[in-house]
Image (cartoon, rainbow, N blue to C red; front, side):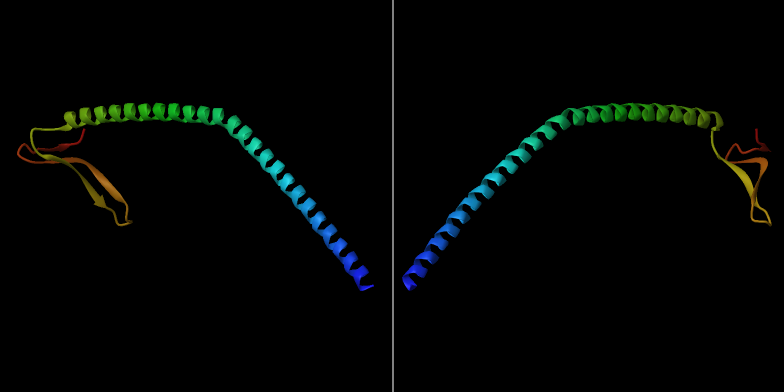
Length: 127
């Protein structure tokens, strides 16, 4: 009886071992197929995204160039206007000051007087 039970137990252990091996192979095969599918999907997505990435990069570069050109142009124009205005206001010597007085309510009020301080200073009304 003991020998019979031992043989039955041995056969059961062998079947469990066989099933375990088969199950391990099935899991490995499924994992391999999933990995291959993920790799294929990654290649497809990457391939599909590359043209769009290139297009977006081109559009951003073009817009950046246009904005940079517009800023340079505006800066040049403003600089020209400032240079022109300062040349028109410049005298041989001195500085321009506008008189500004703080009022009782805390606000400021400027006068229409222009005070020129320097060697050629004159007191007159601002134009």
